[in-house]
Length: 184
Image 1 (cartoon, one colour):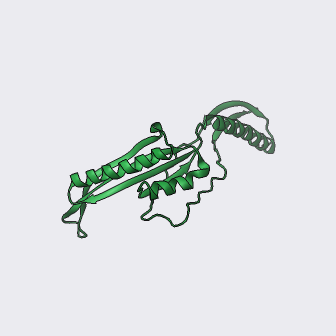
Image 2 (spheres, rainbow, N blue to C red):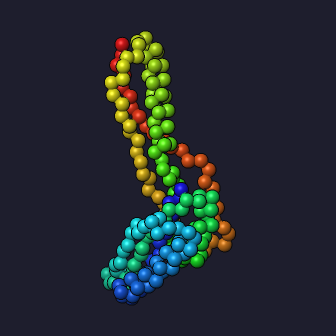
């Protein structure tokens, strides 16, 4: 699955004008996402902001800016490049990022956890043999796996002349375990 972060922004002389312009741009972007087949449940607001921007000296308010960032779930990873192109070129997205993950990582994580524990046992056995002792019973097992990585966001100011290429390749699932053994 691809997690696509897309956003739109506006700068106007008043906060109300920036917010109104942003609402129109967001509506166009959301409409394009839906036209691509993204379900309502897979379109989430990730951020929304309205506030002033200042003159180069930072002393006076030059106007107001508004931005909205959406997080979209795209389940057809082979076509994510074309999807990004459509979101930028027809949807008006100006801030775009993408990351890849599993729709349901639990099975892959369970398999990786089992392999990690088998590997931990093998390493512990090798160390015990090298130290001239026997490996005893397991005293403690911990899953030290970290989850969640921030997605990069790229600023795209103009439509790309060529189709966006995003090779998917392989997705690695990493699990880190700690196993403490008694020495017999």
